[in-house]
Image (cartoon, rainbow, N blue to C red; front, side, top):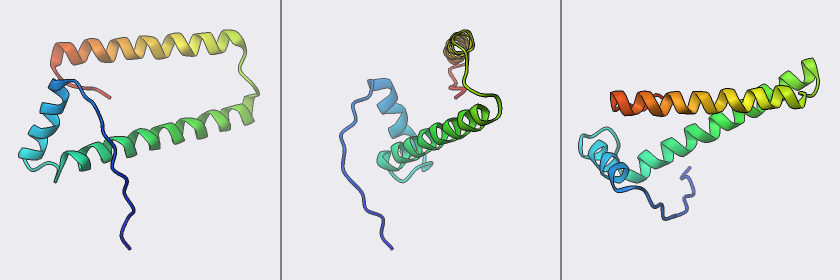
Amino acid sequence: MAEHVTRVTVTLPTEQAEEAKRLVAEGRYPSVSAFMAELVAQRLAEREAQKHFWSELRDQVGELTEDERAWIKSAQAATDQAREYFASVDGEDLS
């Protein structure tokens, strides 16, 4: 059964667009669209897993306090900063 697709336009920084095209040229993806579709699918799966995790946690321990929510936000920000730092040092995305 053929999958329905919808055409969308995505604007990327030049460096990212060039990297995606390089991956296609190397044969790692059949097209930039296939590369983008994989990234979107991965991110959507991550979001779904996070929703499931938080739902299960809430079922087990109840709602988070404001202090717990603040701690989680600061931990997420620190993780993002570390990921950006190491990507800039290594030239590699650690996502």
